[in-house]
Amino acid sequence: MTNCVFCKIIAKEIPAQIVHEDEFCIGFNDIHPKAPVHLLLVPKKHIPTLSDIDDHEEQLVGHMIKIAKEIAHKEKCEGYRLVFNVNEKGGQEVFHLHMHLMGWK
Ligand code: AMP
Ligand code: ZN
Image (cartoon, rainbow, N blue to C red; front, side, top):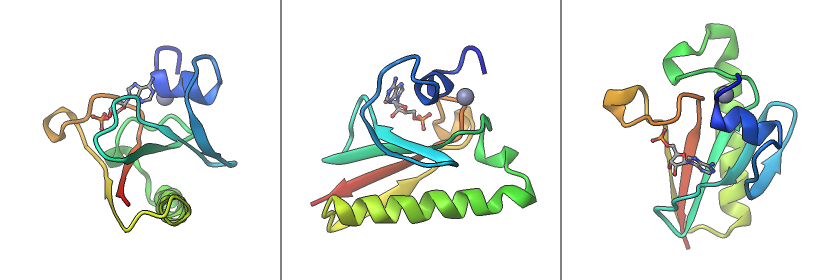
């Protein structure tokens, strides 16, 4: 999507500290971290919100959770939180689906 900041990061048109990339998703550090480890797991497909996930895309969310778990272990987080903000009232600011991984060592 032309004017989407996360699509631009995926296309490498704007820089980000990328910590994971595979066929389905990308993980990069949040620009305004709210925890010692704070990154975003983002599907490569432009899907605006969690509410827009179709039934056949449920496994994509499962994949994102699996990758987040692996990164949290690699970063030696003793505890972590996975958060989806959904829609403006849910605190969502960027309308390209993403999951926050916030971790504490
Ligand atoms: P949300 O409120 O769930 O939509 O969260 C959007 C998150 O994206 C915020 O935590 C921002 O700090 C983060 N963010 C926005 N632009 C960038 C960027 N260019 N690189 C990394 N993180 C970003
Ligand atoms: Zn996008």
